[in-house]
Amino acid sequence: MTANAPQPIGRAAPATLALVALLAAGCGVGGDDSAGAVDGSVSGEVVVFAAASLTEAFTEIGESFEAAHPDASVTFSFAASSELVAQILEGAPADVYASADLATMSRLTDAGLNAAEPVVFAENRSEIVVAEGNPLGIGTVADLADPDLLVVTCAPQAPCGAYATQIFERAGVEVTPDSYEQNVKSVVTKVRIGEADAGIAYATDVAAAADDVDGVAIPAEVDVVAEYPMTLTTEATNPVGGDAFVDLVVSDSGRAILAAHGFSTP
Amino acid sequence: MTATHERATAPRRVGRERLPIPALVLACLAVAFFALPFIGLLWRAPWRSLGDVLGRDTVRDALWLSIQTSLASVVASLLLGVPLAWLLARIDFPGRGLVRALATLSMVLPPVVGGVALFASFGRRGLFGQYLDEWFGLRLPFTTSGVIVAQTFVAMPFLVLTVEAALRQFDHRVEDAARTLGAGRWYVFSRVTLPAIRPALVAGAVLAWARALGEFGATITFAGNFPGETQTMPLATYLALETDPDEAIMLALVLIAVSFAVLLGLRDRWLGGSRVIES
Image 1 (spheres, rainbow over the protein chains, first blue to last red):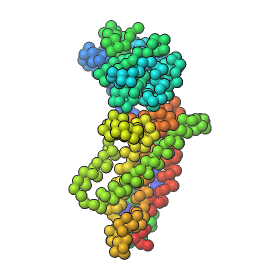
Image 2: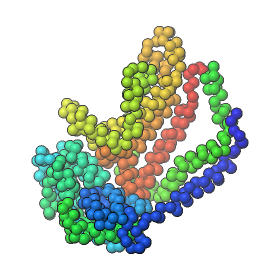
Image 3: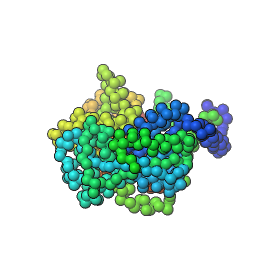
Image 4: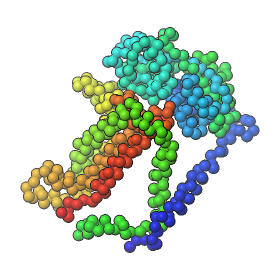
């Protein structure tokens, strides 16, 4: 009642596979169209993968980059450094990678995906992030051990989570967070909307949300200084633009922007 | 008469019918599209570390938690979703379209936004959540109950839509007959209607269960991420991906194996047609 010609599946399958292969090949050839590398001038799109804590500072640096290079544009992907490095290892097209710790950067260099020696361009401190006005009177890292407190930190995979773990160890307290968040912004958000009482976040992220949260300083002997390395990747499709972006970050004007957002610069 | 006739001949037609070649090619393409990602996953899987990964506490905790919470979500979906489907299918009330849209909104809502919405309503500072906390000491964010709420929120629409469609197609006259014989509304629904739409009920429950099992965005947003308490398999897989892709792949395969086994085991039951009318 319906078919025109009987067609056993066995004969159709090779054709289908060929078609699939064709489609796959078609996707593979395009895509190498990013400009910039041709004559050494900075142009085209520069893709920067950066730790979530760099969101505000890098966005501002990106604006000044685009002002200095009208033919170029910067596209950022901000997330946990660990998430970003996993994406790059899977072939994500990042020109520049900036991590919030050395350990995560070493996963990139171990894989040989860094086109240059990573350069440490900023340092950060951690703080206890609490609700505005610190209504619960949290004063020290040891206070976070109170089981009645809702405490969130980054997942240990992410640099901010690794720092939090070290801070708890150095303070000699046993803190069991109620949630391991994906990245530092998510930690601040949970405190910001009042779902968590306290968290461990970078001083810069606390400052960025200063309207809604307060930070409680962590003494230097307990705190761990966060070092931020960045590098051009070997997968860069716009190495000239990527280099220019790295240059801008470590320049005086880049350092001034980082400092304005609370980072210290080496 | 045609309805009964078609149903009786349906099993034989499945084997006899032939597709036009273009349709067959496209169908094969669809199969390849579904199969290739899994083949890729199997190809990349580090089989040697299977035992090692499965032995880890975090993995066992996550799997156990996923199974528990997804089943709890299905129970909640059945409990609330079947009466809702009944209401939508049978009662003509003003605003029915609105209610149906509302009931299915979470299907199209990005799950992360769903998580934020749950915060705004059931969070500690949420519209209703603050009273839950104040009056009953009940806190949903960062708890296993929160996981179930998040999963139910995104999964229940699948059950509601499936069951509602079946209820609409079901022949009213059978129910009317039962009622003329003196059966009450509830008796008719539970003894006549529900058994008759059992395939749709099972299909809806399986769809909801599958959706709950794979739920990620609403869960990590609303319920947070803590091993053994709120870290379900999708969350564990996602976080493992950042540091140990091999572990992530093994976790994904475990989840796929569990789901596939259930879907395969149930296929006959939910593909089998409604048999009540003939008998």
